[in-house]
Length: 402
Ligand SMILES: [Mg+2]
Image 1: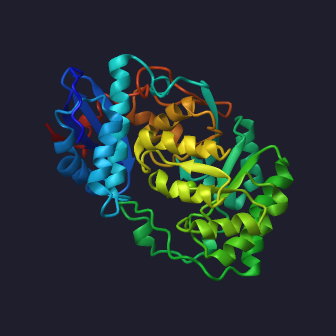
Image 2: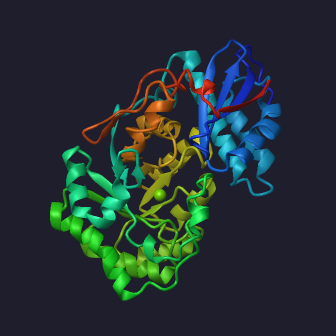
C-alpha cells in the first residue's frame, strides 16, 4: 500500500445499510475523521458484498487518506485480482469507490463531474427499460400493446425504449427462484431452439412499434444472455430492417471473438456490456472490434474510478458510452456524474417506474427526468443523500467498521 504524506481527512468509519424492501441492494457510507459522509451503492448478493467491505476492505481503508481514491482502488484490486475479483469483491470496491468520490465532493463542495475534470453537459437523454415497476406495467405493455406503449413514452418526451421480445421463448427458471423473496436475477439456461414462429412473434413487437410511431423512437433490444450464437445471429438478422439502436447481451458476452461474429455477420449494432467487470474485458472487446456501444455499470465494474477509464477507452475507439441502471438510485446518480464529464456519454438507462417510484422514497434529492432528459446535479458529490429516516425504518440493518 502506498503511504502518502498528507494532513487530509482520513477514513474513520465504514457502514453498510440494507433495507428490507430492497433485499438485493446495499449502500455504504464512508465517514472521515472530520465527520463528512460519502455514499456508495451496489446491487446483488449484498451479504457477500457486506463481508468483503467489513472483513477485507475496512482494515485497509480505515485511517487512510479519504481522498486517495486511485491509490485505494489499486490497493483493493491488488488484494483480490489473484483469485477472480469479478464477484462480490468488485461490487464492494465499486460501492466504496463511489462513496470516496462522494466524500471528496462533500469536502470540496464540488460535484463529482467537476472533480473528474469538469462538466461537458448538464443533462443527458434517457431511455426507459420496460420493466413492470411502480405504476408502470411496461413489460406487460411491450408484450401486449407495444405500439401504444411507444406512443405513451413519446408523449412523455422519452425517445428510447428497451424491450426483450425473445426472452419468453428461452428456457425458464423455476418460478420460485425467479420470484422468491430474495429476488434473484436468475433467468434460466441458454436457449438453443428458437423456432421460426417464435422468431417472428418476437419480431412482431418491434414491427408494431415501427408501424405505430415510425422511427420517432429508439428501440433497444435486451438479450439477457438467453441465446446461443445461432439463435442470436437469426434474431439480429431479423432486426436489420428495423434500424434498432442496439442489441445487448443477446449472447453471454464472455467471448470477444463470438461477439465479433455478431458484428461481422449482421448489420445490427451491439452494446457490450454491463456484465463486463473492470476495464480489462472491455479492452479485449474493443480490440476485437466486437462492440458499437460501451454499456458500463458503475456499481459493478469498479466504481467511478474504473468506469471513467472505460469511458476513455471507448472514446479512443470512437464509440459512445451508455451507462446501465436497472438497480438503484445511487447507480443512477453516479452514472450521471460520469456522464457529466465523459464526452462520449450518449444516453442514460432509466426505469420510469423506479425513478418515479421507490427511488424517491430512499434518497433526499432524487434524479428528475423531464421531457426525456435527466438533469445532472451540480451539487457537492453525487448531489443526494440517503433519506434521513431510512435507518429507523423497520427491517433496516446497519453494520459498522470503525
Ligand atoms: Mg442490460
